[in-house]
Image 1 (tube, rainbow, N blue to C red):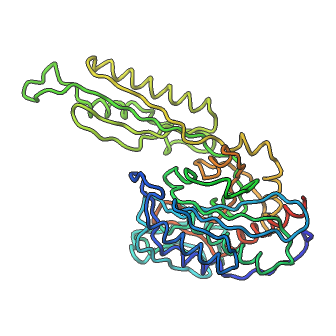
Image 2: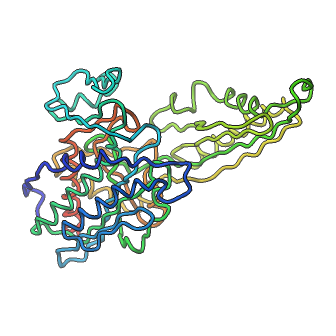
Length: 419
């Protein structure tokens, strides 16, 4: 199938997205189970049933909340098995219960006031990507919840592409694998994935922002936990004796860099130290951090900075103790993807065939693809069209979702062409 062939797509991706968006799938970092919330399986069951209805007999929701399915090859060529992956959960940062999507048709510019809470306004000055959406249909919430385009837009796009490939057998492709994961938003999206069952050679997460973007690089990530043991005594007789663990923790936070090394002061390739939790009492307190950088050396530098701050603070509390525990979370997938340049090259060509200009960029975050890459399944990230994720101002456009569907279909065909 040549690159010049015109493919006519339907507009069913929006219908799918609206159907999925109203299902509450918020994950829970405090839960030890997999999935962390059983309600994620509500969407998983629907997706598996829809895939089975398309004719994919092996479509399955497993006990851990993962959905697997296979579109068989329809070519005589030996083509690598390609997986398309999105996650079902939504962020714990903002409510995902009772989502009420609205469609702003033929957007003409200006502010979008969300009807459920008029104080929530999507302003072009704060969302510059809206400038490229004039004439498009913008999907938002009513302003009381997040939308869930992260990553239900990706789910809808993969589902729509699967439906299209199944019903257009003249479009040749190799084996296509589908994987939908739980708990990506809490960093556990591939904890229980069965790569033997998946049986893919390469993969793409469909979980990016601006239409046309492909991301082959993510942060490397560690977590840091500081446990402080202070000195407790009766407050009426505490002079010269008490060393308050909460005050020690607060002093550590206060010593963090004010104008650098934090999410609110960095951009581009700059990493950060980010406190995400503090708890405790007089005798014992705990501080949680995430550490992010694009290089392992950058991670080490920030972790050394943190320990230096702790040691300096602890000089003022000679009878107290601390423990700093660093745990690896994921690593920059570029280290793996660069060994297989065809993965990104094929995706960039698919984006071109969808009528967009491909832009290769980095993610100031991570995806399931970060860990999948280091588990032996190289996996860059392709745009889904989602914007302002993890917030009540989240939005996505119908046209961008349709371009993502086209990109997936073209990508499946390109792998077969170039096999």
